[in-house]
Image (cartoon, rainbow over all chains, first blue to last red; front, side, top):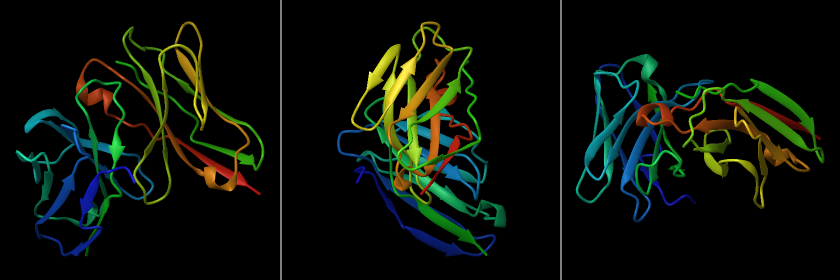
Length: 114
Length: 111
């Protein structure tokens, strides 16, 4: 158990809908990262937050947004969903922002857009 | 910015030692090298990290030559449960690049 909690584990929705994925980082970790992994694809970095502030942005679509709350949990909002958004979405956390820090990943949210 | 290159896939048999090499020709002075393991439908898990020479833990060893332009993850006596994708990450000064996982190496261990 990595200590990172993601909910829900599975999500099935229809095209055009909006969903929210939730992540609770490990106790004491201030950084939260979101990744997308499509079938047979590598991990695509979406966005990172540190102590409530956006820290780094990757290949995140404009239809997607995220935030980190004062209690350090984070939410990833996906809107106007398309079939191609079906993927595993992982959240990871680390203590800070140093590039050599270990990332601890949650078990992911499997999103299926039908 | 350090880009990494790894073999796409490797095959091995139980009990053998597996070495996966990662090339990172543009590694910067302050960059660390980190390896993660990912099983299907699970999040990646940290395996080992090093800066130079050799690092060993209970799971693996990491060999880094003096020029640091490559690194080799060594898994001793693999078992079927070591079948997974292995990612090599090299830190970079800009946050976004440091967080980019490549395609990884898919290791298949046969009985």
